[in-house]
Length: 502
Image 1 (spheres, rainbow, N blue to C red):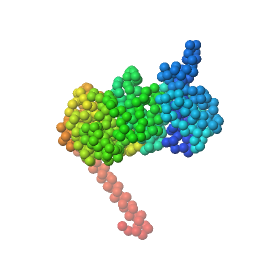
Image 2: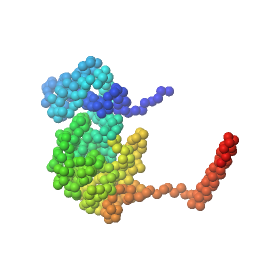
Image 3: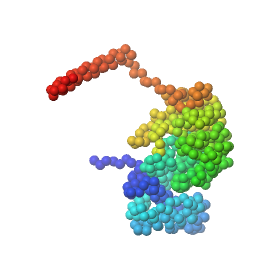
Image 4: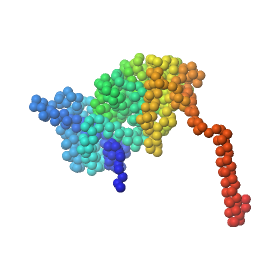
């Protein structure tokens, strides 16, 4: 009987696309594939509106303004997918796609310097490129889901994750695993307002925020996203990622100096801040920024920017805002170079709302365990308390090297947090969660490692009396010792047969 393939649509598509990669590095190939997926998406969106305009005698389907009015990218004839597909088998296909990307950028200023023009490179096999175009042209793309925006968003997001996995440590620089992003978004609930990510990578925090709003019957126009990224190729990925979701990326900026040295949104006060900044970043610019106004709770040491990122976010947090940031576990207990004093100042100012300890192996770029800090300027029901959640034992091994959360894991952490905030159905659970007072934290020397507060879970009582259990264990031990003695005698006999005595 033939084996049934239960792979998802995205998995099948990625497997097929990856087969065509051949000798090209994943880091380079991701731009080839994701660029084509983006071009196919905008071409389909354009064609859908084009057909409507063509059917209307009062409209001109080649009028660019008609598309601007409908918030749809205008795709020139040279870049339309029908033209690309017709040229797929020609040796000049690489040049054709590069020209298509160039014309799309010229017609849509928000895509200027965003689209990859790498298809004419000599190392890209043109036969494989033609096969990749045929693959992406597959009618299943339309049949799979009528909502092409959602479908292409899913495909793009899945491919980003798979390429991050293939790239390992480098992949982690542009991609935060979906489960972590989902957990953070569902905990801070960005329904309405300004959402900011100062290390925005490929835009995953914004995409998940958009999903959260739509899943809860909100209006995506009620949130505005602000971001900053120092890696230009990653910024390009994010611009395409957000465009597929129709998320306005006008305020998602790129500059080589980075967030500390060139703050792209100096006056921003955000309602929601979500970030996964670089862990333990060195040489972040203390020689220039030592007296910067962002360091209200203490100047971060030059050897580690963790508390720099945290204070940068606090500086941009609106009075009633909430922030969630992923940091390495070292941030919870370090006393190096004044970091302990900064943490003490944050705790004493009652800014720390919750700490979630994460398991190892969740991230692509590091195997070390990390944590999520939740901070609020105004803590409504729980002033002078911090909720500690130890999720370090949750999750499952998705592969030999990567762990992931299940939906149930995410729900367990999220609901514990929300119940605690509302003061409903919450109770401390030994080994998992604890609402600790500031006095308790002070007694622990301001260390915020959740394990110190939640304790070790009680072992389940099997109901067997101690005396009975010890009698059974003793009998088993005697059996094993008797067996050992018998085996030793047999070994001595066998050795004697060949002339050795013990």
